[in-house]
Length: 261
Image (tube, rainbow, N blue to C red; front, side, top):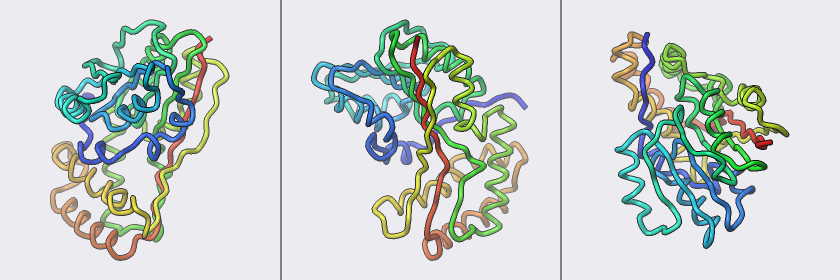
């Protein structure tokens, strides 16, 4: 099957923040830093980065999706030290320009993550940092277990991703990719997204998988990984379960940091 491109759900992208959804990076930022955000989407996290490094710092967000970039430019037009550029992560041409080059939840959608990390390394200054946050979709957990109808379609989602060459265990493979790219002092730490019923983020975090399956429904059905009837039943059961029974959701993530020698 030929690889496909993917546009993430703008609603989900727009709900995210630097402090909540890229915590490792938030701890590393300092006023005056120059930062490149690869796969910036609608710019919700990128805008937080720009605020963290002002007044002298500068941030560039890059994405290949012009629709998402238009949203980013409109939503964050008032931030003077922030700009958005169209660009493919596999063909970045920045050289030794940024103190930090980062990406969050983007490499999971790219069939050549090693090439992207090489490009990120080249974009960072010597002594600068590359910081990547991503998922291990095979280790996600729900308490209690979700309905079997949802599990069927979730497994179909993973199989569809694998068929496109997208790594379902991206988070766990990042340290090796960093070292292969020549980054040094590589470290990796768990940065799971954990949400419990009653917490402020519970509503949209529990919606995430319902929204994701709806967003990729046409691709899953067209590729033969599940039927329309299976998907409709999965969404019906999942939404009812999430509203009444879901107590805790843990999405397995890791943040990996490397230094440019």
